[in-house]
Length: 112
Image (tube, rainbow, N blue to C red; front, side, top):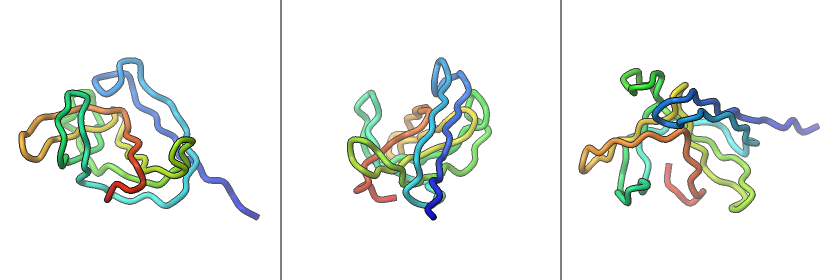
């Protein structure tokens, strides 16, 4: 008998999400720690980014972010990158720019 596994994304209201986020995804693989990703911010800054879990609103309480494969209605399977109670802090490696996100869903072809 197959057991469906799910992961919840719960982010408090704050810089990563004004109203907070509470979502659930069906897992398609195990979680792993992720420290860098290729990403393009809403401002168009692309390249490699360091990624951290944010435990507090200002992002000073940082820990490891996690990535896991989840079922995705558009791509079939995609990477879900999750952080802490206040989402993710992303730091652009080349420029030092900082971005806050509640979570990220990235193409499965993305190298983690």
